Image 1 (cartoon, rainbow, N blue to C red):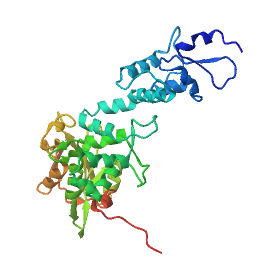
Image 2 (image 1 turned 180 degrees about the horizontal axis):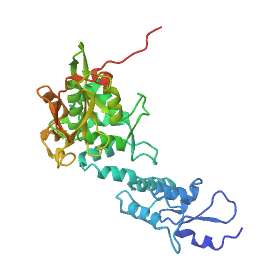
Image 3 (image 1 turned 90 degrees about the horizontal axis):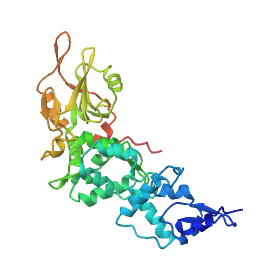
Image 4 (image 1 turned 90 degrees about the vertical axis):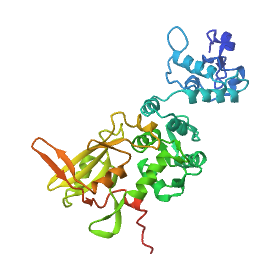
Length: 360
C-alpha cells in the first residue's frame, strides 16, 4: 500500500498505524502527540478528539479541525500542560483538556443558579472515572463525604431523616455506592431550599431541610396520635387534585410547583367545599436565587398573600390563625386550611416511619 507521501510528515503529528504492517499512517493533527505515541494502539483520530473534549469527527476543509484546535488551545492554556514525553503523559493531558471542555447541558444549568459556593461545592466532589458523564453525575456517597469535609459541625448530616429527605428530593433510590446524583437535580433542589454555603457553622441547604423535618409534622384532626407532614414534595397539580378530591373541606397540602420550578416556587393546594384551589407561593420580585442568596440569616423570600416569609414553615404557622383569601371574577372567598391531606408520599421519610416486610 502506498503511503501517498504522508510518512514525510511524521514529525508534524502523523502517527504510524500500529494495526497495519505496511508503511501507511493515520493522520492525527495534534501537536500533543510525540513519536512515542505510536504505542497507543486503540486511539485513532476520533478517540483523540473525544479525549480533547471535542466532538466533530470531520476535519475542516483546507486545514485542521477548528474544534480540535480549540481543545488544544484550552489544554495549552492550562497550568498542568507540558510537552508530553510519553504516551501516559499525552493521555493524562488529553484528559485534562476533556475535563475543561464544557458540557452544554451543565453550562445551561449552572447559569440558571448564580451561586458560586454551590457550584464550587459540586465541582469539588470527587469525580467518577467515566469522562462522558463526570461533569453532570456524581456518586451520592462521595457527595455526603464532601458535605462532612466542608461542614464538619452540621448536625443535619447525623440526622437520618434529613439525609433520606435529601435523597428523595434528588430523585435517587438505593443505598449502594453506585447511586448517582444528577447536576440538574442538585440545582433544582437548591432553587427550592437554598444554597450549599456556610452561614455561621451550618450549611444553609441542610439547615433548611432540617427545619422542614422538625417543623412540618403536625397532629391531624382525625388521628391525634399520629403526626403527618403537609409537605407533598414534587407533585403535579393533577395529582394534588386526585388526592384532595375525596377529602373533606379544609384539607390542604403544599407542593413544589412544576410550572415555576426554575424559580423555586411552591403552591398551596386546598379543598373548599367542592372546589379545589391552587394558590401560588412565589419568590419575591427579586427573589431566590438573587435576593435570597444575600440574606443573613438566610431567608427563602417567599411571597404568599402579598406578604413575604422566610420559609414554608412560617407560612403554615400563620395558616392556623386566619383564612386564605382568594379573589375570582365573582367575589372573594375565604378558605380555612384545617386538615392536612393524609397519605402524602414524603410522610414516611419526614416522620421516620418506614414499612418493613413481616418476618417469616
